[in-house]
Image (cartoon, rainbow, N blue to C red; front, side):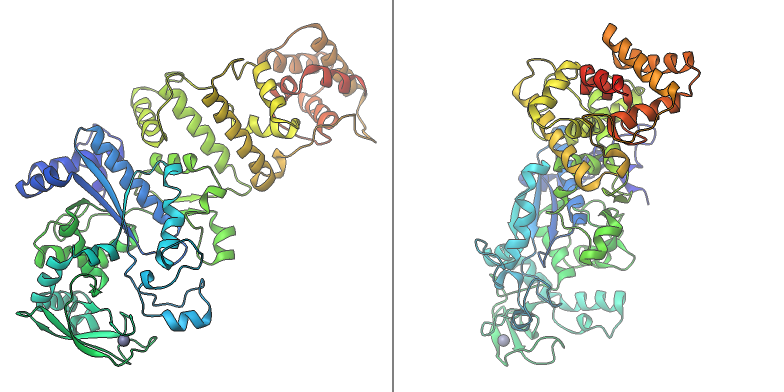
Length: 560
Ligand SMILES: [Zn+2]
């Protein structure tokens, strides 16, 4: 089911470009889609129910749609990514974010009719949706935001509502075929009225559709759902202009013609056999006469994207639901998360573990490598170079710099933040080692400072014990070294006094000196770390000594 990259085998395109090519081919082959694309642009669409804290996994979908829209634009077509907040969905399970009383009161209502838990937001749904979308600039996500509820109120769905109600029997038949004749949806009209009295949606049932008058007879009552009580109101009502909503599988399909959607993928949990995507594809084809968006093809759903989890074990147990999108920036900078999601094919699962693992070190190394390849500073072979350059382009936020920016690895940055008190000293050290030019432009300096800041956080919160240290001001009390070890340290101190070393030359001296004294190199390294850090191990010694500054090291080595 590898639909994302099958068509042009051998060319081995980057996944987003492959999707863009497949989508363009699909549109070009259909007069209907061609006219839609001409009128509205290629619409990549995604949606999310703001029922509470939105999981980081949804963020994967936003980045995927954003990347597809960008890849389409890079191919010269007009493309837009629209993200809708499904704020007409109803609170059906008790929310942890609401008090017991409020859960009682609001269950069965739309998230747009429940007050925001925090002031300054329009409603409950708006609050949770905006927790995410306010971070979009930081993630480089360019999306047009809308609210499904607003679209209902504007009448955008009126046409599809009429089609669905006129064809209620078809919809019921599809529900029965997929889920059995006994399911409730197979036996009722496919529209849920919002009770004008109590404003609940889940407690109403539509019993009759007057096709001529375009009115629904509905009752709001007990027993429609077990978990919420209706108020007893009933009557005839127009289903249009925000007076209710579709059941959500029908709604998914109704959105496609309504918003002229050409691309919409979702998490693979929606793409299981007979799942919501299967139903939506059936409704789209059989009821709305609309071709389901990519990656679906007619009744065939195609594949959804894989899961994305951050800090699986540690965090999912404490919160019971995994990490929220808005919280993810506490575990890695947005630009690094974006890079991770762009570089990974949508059909590969991601489990990112910031705590006590090498995941963050690796992530930064891969980012830096992609940057080096982009600026032709590293060669990984033609094919891989092409891939890395594309990853860098699509994951970069804002304008790509004109020249190769200075790079400081996360490990080196973590060393600096533990070695020096002030940022000024760190910058000075980087200038001394030549990792940062003396007059670096402001934006390059900012990038380095950002990395130093994150390195500080990494050391404090995430790094394994082996990456933590404290530079000693004098040789630790009670330090015991062999005679040969002391001699080796003295010898290195002497050499440091004599000449200037770069990392490589200094590293070689460690081996020369050890060999000359018939000392095992490991014993030399252990003694150096003990004197400098009061630990048996530490960061790479040569760059460390150069970064600390040799005066300090000479003094410490001579003191033993
Ligand atoms: Zn009611």
